[in-house]
Length: 267
Length: 261
Image 1 (tube, rainbow over the protein chains, first blue to last red):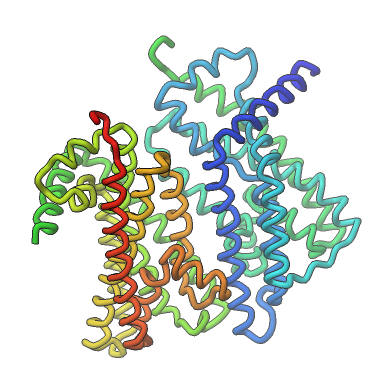
Image 2 (tube, each protein chain N blue to C red; image 1 turned 45 degrees about the vertical axis):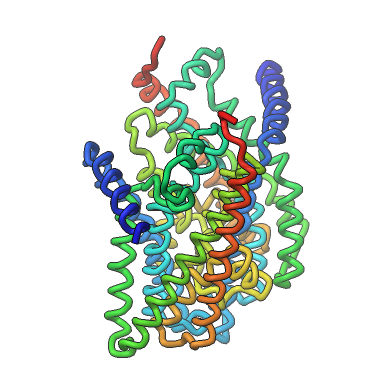
């Protein structure tokens, strides 16, 4: 086990060094990850202002709080592996990774974590700026904050496993853009990004509870905002744990059948 | 109209180059249709809870999404690929060949590469625009359509000049592809009327990244809410920005030292 810990530590170090070299691409991701929640924040606060009451249980300042927290949670859980896998496999750079005596997902997780370490200060600054501009209604409680920590870790792991499984599609087809677009749509609608899930029509809410996406973004956000009862939090954490198990098995199986299809010059 | 003749030539070359891969047509159609579907589904969700968004009705926003796709398609079809190639040509010195040609170099670099599949976005944008117009019905008369066309042309000139200025910085900064990508991510903000954004963001989307003139103003014309003053302002901005871009390009070219010099 210390072997794996050493590996993560080393990967984190090199990852952070690389991120600091390629600052520009980091800035691009940052702008995108701030701008998208900001746009929906503005849209929904505009909607709630035009309807005198609340929308799906959210008032104007609740929407602001929701999207500021969502921006942070999304940053902490998002990954870009599905955009990178296509390149790796098409260009054959994956050959070297396959020779490593360890599952390649570990290097990806470590790289992702190092990007978060570098970008977190900027995201917190952005969140502070948006807090000043939009006067969100936070009701903070220590109990919710304590439950938020495991929920966030589980959300990150589940989202990473799902993304990684989707990314494996690159082994099977060279046209992954459509698959990525469908995946993006599913995340947008069912994770709570386009709107808080209580704003969606009832049937879509049911679908969102069944799919993994809500448990990777929306659930930790609602939890931290104090919108969930203790029972809901317990059930949510259990569902996240179940998805973690299912995701691990899924990655194992999908990896086994997918990697057999890989071929490159020299392989 | 040298510009149109050249554009036509490069478009034809683009079609010939891609005609060998007909399956790509379907793949790109699926991609664009999914993106459009996402945008329209988002609208449906919002208008399930309200009847207007910042004073815009659902049909007006459908038309706005049409404009967003139409202009986004034009940018992706000719402006973006050309400007990306320009930054590359500056870096590796192949711009020498272009500068030596008898045709105006700015004209050449503006049309020398086309991403022909983006025609799909242009087409889909027109269809959505048409649907929005049909639903707006009689409220759109000849005057509105004329104002729309004028605003759209001004918007296209503004976006083109803006891209040219960004790409021209490559003469000094060498690696600017990333700046171009940032424009793309900010362009997304144009999917909504800029009037809903708070003042500082509206200012940024009007003058720093001119999304407002490109998308909101033309769509406003269709909704019959465009005053002559705003249209005049858009054209004045277009002319000034185009002249500035041209001047900046000339200074850039003079600054350029090619691979052979």
